[in-house]
Image (tube, rainbow, N blue to C red):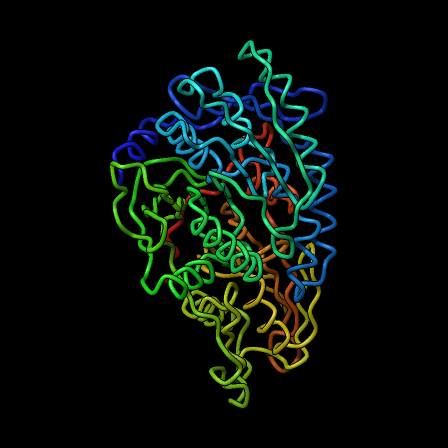
Length: 447
């Protein structure tokens, strides 16, 4: 990793919530020791409107969910990391006169470049173009400009433009910046193509990511074009779960993966915050589940509840769908605050699609004679709705099961310790006041 990149990320403090300005959350985000940027996020009502629209999109159509996602109107950790390195780059290399940010969202990178103008080397005035495929984030950026002008005591000039880089050509630039965009395969592959084109034209490329599902497709596209794998290096930073940030140090023009020369050749630094590994339970395919196995013989409710809970903990079917059919009636019905599913096979398939990289820990069981029992359990990990790769803060689920006359579980009704809207807002804007704290880790007695 180039020393100037390492230096840019030393002691990078997390954002500070200053309050509410005109219904917007007002943040102060450090990007260097000498520069902090005022940033605006959408207010709670606007975020909830985006969340509701995303939840209404079909689960099997992630593009539809992404079209109404809330993550363009809040700050993501990757943006601060990329902005810090961008500032260091512009101070180091005055030949970089044009900055293009893709998927700007709230515009931290663009605002950082524009706010740096008085401190760049002589003759180093930078033209900044912030783009996004939606107008709402760009409006937040424009509203933040006068706040930064007041703080910095200087005018900020930033051009904004609606641009969908998956289907539109990119303007030529000296520096290409993108942070937190690797949600979908199509977007990730299009971004890789844009990065490669920019590098071929001598641009410096900065890309940030919080280990979203599209990252493998992005790296694969780069590796295929460059003929070599791209590697990651770890640096300290902050993220939504307060874990290390990984830095992919590269150089260019292609091939990537070598140290930058002192001669000032065109270069790239692909930045990627990564999350701490959690217990991973593979999603079961239909062929791995013994759907034809004999059903369990009827026993007392207490024995059923104990065996059922131990199997739930062992196979983790509550988060991966790998059920043991012997416990269930084929017409099992599942309900939670957002979803109703009919049939045990449909439940298995749906759970495996909605959740990923999750851990379920059974806490206790309560009996309600003659035909009901409830399991309290803690869930932590990642959801794939309303958009892929959404990290959810840990919360407690209470699952109440009913048992039919054959002694088989025929329904499940779930309730959550934290409302769905709180879970979603905590994922996209954890610094908002009034949100419930995450549930602490537990040691399951059924493990």
